Amino acid sequence: MSDLERAGDAASPFPYAPSRESTEIVSLQERYGLFIGGELVEPKSGAWFPTISPATEEPLAEVAEAGEEDVDLAVESARGAWERHWRDLPGRERAKYLYRIARALQERAREFAVLETLDGGKPIRESRDVDLPLAAAHFFYYAGWADKLGYAFAGRTPRPLGVAAQVIPWNFPLLMAAWKLAPALATGNTAVLKPAETTPLTALLLTEVLQDADLPPGVVNVITGAGETGSHLVNHPGIDKVAFTGSTEVGKIIQRSLAGTGRRLTLELGGKAANIVFEDAPLDQAVEGIVNGIYFNQGHVCCAGSRLLVQESVAGPVLEKLKDRLETLRVGDPLDKNTDVGAINSRAQLDKITELVQAGVDEGAEMYQPACDLPERGYWFRPTVFTSVAQSHRIAQEEIFGPVLAVMTFRTPEEALVKANNTPYGLSAGVWTEKGSRILWMASRLRAGVIWANTYNRFDPASPFGGYKESGFGREGGLHGLEPYLAFEGAG
Ligand code: NDP
Image (cartoon, rainbow, N blue to C red; front, side, top):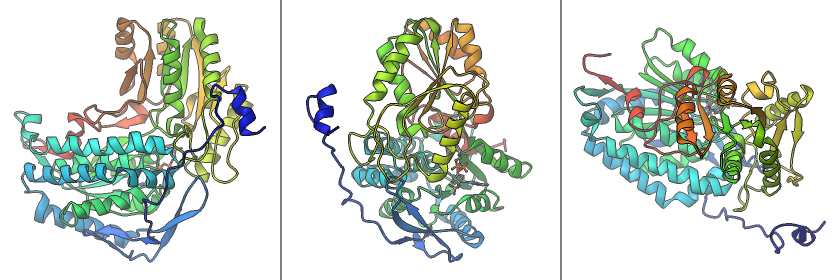
């Protein structure tokens, strides 16, 4: 069927025309070294690896792989900068640097957004409208705190810890860098940041912003590499604090290896959130919230609403509306401004999603996928809904980290609560109902760090984010996000 014929059936009378964002604004280097001591340097390891576009499988650039010696240099550089410049710099001076970084991110937002989409596969609409504004907002927000720490912790005297090792994942590469760097710098710490192997480019572009902001060399160091590099970094004796976002599995390894070292640790790990729809909810809005909850960023979101709990009395209409809505989602070229669901971040992640979806089918759940065409090259997965899901199914228990929703029903609020809390995770949840009292009743009993009411996946730098149970500990964002980077006189 031609596009024109298809258009006859669809809601729009016009044939589909893509609106592709130009990539001209991004100038890629062939190779990127490690950002140590304020400049990009060749790795002592002599090792490099390619970073590719998951939408085309084409290589974008080569990136240095930091070995043990490189990690030593980065930590030394951060330590030196802390002792020479940063530790004793007044908060109002630190704030100026953070404001400069925030403004530069705004000025270069389009360039960063395009690069994020190229390297990670997320829709340009999301990198442009979510990742970039939020990354800048984090720097603005924490710039505001830098000279007010005495007010933030009245009656206590805060002091910085020293050098922070920060390891981040591939789902929100620049935003996670901002979540980590902004509070660390605001509180007077220096940092060594390790971006994920598959998405290093926006953190490397950020180093240009840091240079333009005249940040003293060594205050932020960016070392690229895979899990081994991350492991060298978090186990380095020269660091004072580890902040990690990633899988629960790696979080546990890090926690074990740090036990007894006295180094501070925050872990932001996986999730398997329940998005709970009561019969009195505005159903059309709830369906938008369900879609945003699980298909935003291809479901590569730790707080994704991957389990839909819908009250039995409205399960029929909700599923019907959801399936209709899925037919309208556009899957494909992430640089097309119309795209809703972009590329899966890597071959490995696609394999993991495929395996878990197969497990759902094998265990007897019913799968639904819309009939959308997928590009021939690249890594893609259709938005997927499973019904007839039992709580024991792997798709209801394990984090899939892909565009896959497991639907279950409930009859009473108590049942919804028990089912929602039946998970080893505890990062987030959503509640859809018109009754404020029910929202409060649920929120006070759900074991989740973040609970959205009649909305989903909303983020704000002023609002703390973090988990319970296997979703980790410590909070990022808000006033709470300052504390993991501070010690208090008289306390450790
Ligand atoms: P990882 O936890 O392996 O990766 C997160 C970061 O940690 C990356 O920078 C990674 O490097 C690094 N890393 C890996 N091993 C170690 C180690 N031993 N010590 C220190 N750092 C390490 O997540 P994956 O990318 O492998 O994703 C696997 C699963 O994790 C996903 O399917 C998803 O379920 C979950 N996940 C959850 C996230 C969240 O936000 N909660 C984010 C990302 C993933 P490298 O990239 O090179 O491996």
